[in-house]
Image (cartoon, rainbow, N blue to C red):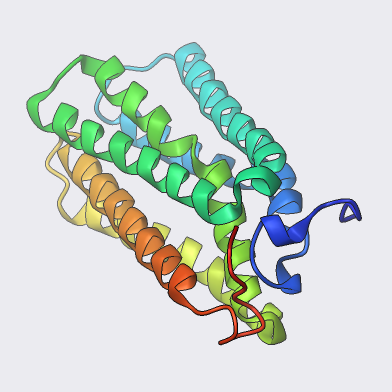
Length: 213
């Protein structure tokens, strides 16, 4: 149930985003646990990971996602979804680049892969909820279609990424590293371009793009 006390104007312009970022942030962590599982499964092909360590790394990844979801639900009405989206994609891009470098030069062994992967996975709490809220705010009259499209893009991009890692597999984590890095950088560029375009729209041009504070 959406909290009636939420100031949605501080989240995204437009009533269509009413509480979406907060509600999604509170329910997103479990739904994206499969990402952590997929990444850890890939790591098992490159390093000897015991079942206990596998469970520990999985738990740490889920805690990271839960932490950013919780933080997002508390911060989104204060800082706005656009800003948190940029924070999330920036952190993910940083983690992706560090991962690609570590994988390429074999830096730090398992820790050199696990730490940047944590930086890449954890910002999910800032990225997913706010991107969905922003999309719904832009197309409120097509909310169902937008929600379906967002879901298709999420799963479709995962399929494409997995296919690329498999196609360029060479027995090292390098393909995984550069695929994740490219995806994270692409997400940051898309977020930056969309947020910039949103704030360039005059207040009188659209009922859904009001002037920000």
